[in-house]
Structure formats: structure tokens, C-alpha cells
Length: 127
Image 1 (cartoon, rainbow, N blue to C red):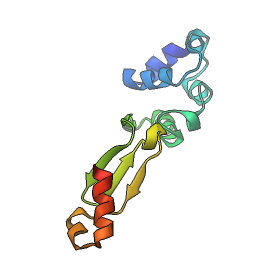
Image 2 (cartoon, one colour):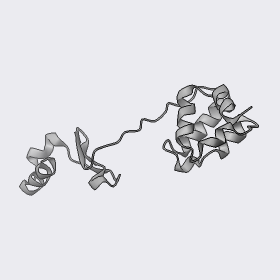
Image 3 (cartoon, rainbow, N blue to C red):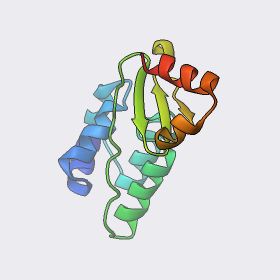
Image 4 (cartoon, helix red, strand yellow):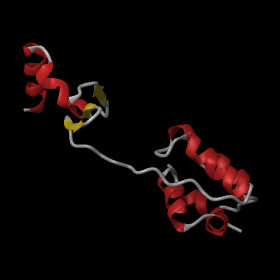
């Protein structure tokens, strides 16, 4: 049985797609596979995957223990320097197109009570 067949036999298609998207060389999918558990552990580096090590460990455990699979994390791509204002703070996502995300603890409803300089700084960020 091929590695791809092992994946399809043990995972829903959306999870198989996640595995495939993490592979550097997709031709390995057509090689002989021995067991799902051994193949999923060596197909790609879980730490370097889009979903992260913890997600793949949870997938492995769920399949091994016949439990419910974890939800696939959303892959959100923000435009450079995207600003989000929420009730618990202000978030600057993908700062300068670097992938870095920053959170500022700014309570917007409390802003009018803040010092004038702090107000100006926050409003300049929002422009």
C-alpha cells in the first residue's frame, strides 16, 4: 500500500491535504508505506509545518486512540501592517510584511480619559 493510500485510509481528505501541503517532495506519497503511524511521523517536520507540532501530535494521538481529530487551524494571511482594533486592545498584524504580529493593550473606551500624547499616538496608528 502506498503512503498516500495509508493517509486516505486513516484521515479525512482535508487532513490529507494538510499533509500534502507540508511535503517538500510529493513523489514520496507513491512509495511503499508500512503503517500510518510510522509514515506520518517521518513525512515532514511537524515543528516546521503550517499547523504546528502540537496539532500533528493531536492528530497522531486521535488516530492511534480512535478519538475525534482536532480542528484544522485557520491559515490567515494579513496584508502588510494590517491594524485590528478590538475591545481588549489594538493589533498590528504582519508588520512591514515581516509576518510579525504586535498587540497593544489599548482600551478604546478608556482612550478619551488618557493623556493627550497617548491619544495622539493611538490615533496616528489608526490613520
